[in-house]
Length: 194
Image (tube, helix red, strand yellow):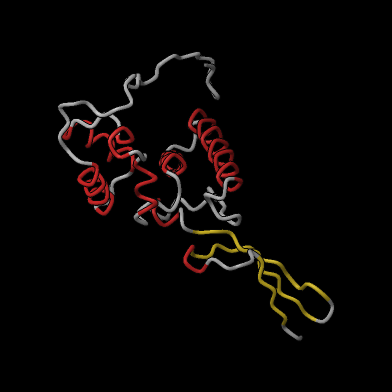
């Protein structure tokens, strides 16, 4: 299959087991698997990291064949799913690291170009997740907040504030507000009589 931002047509892919049933030598029950998944999620591991640990340490090739549900669905059922999807999180993390590199190496044109490609993938993925209601409609990625750690940069959204006087709009400002204070509407209106 063709790649999005390169000329390659790589065919690398994981080969899933043909049998959808758990192997006969696997003695672990699905309750134990769910407990392990929740335990790892509380430690802060992502769904893909949990899957790698279960595969390598517990011999569970596919969680769905044992439990009937994928890892992310189990986490959602227990209220432990990450706030933003994992693939979007890692793209933002990559963009932040490229921005930090560009601060130290301002003449690195290739990194600047790669940052444009990564950020275009972020916007494309965010548009899809907003459409499927996995992100709130006012969520916005802003690239210029690389002085914050990734964990904080993700949980901010852009708010437009309009300040009015008698003659109309005096000024409009845009500011970043914490995710915890997410408003019902992305617009605030203030009226100051002058």
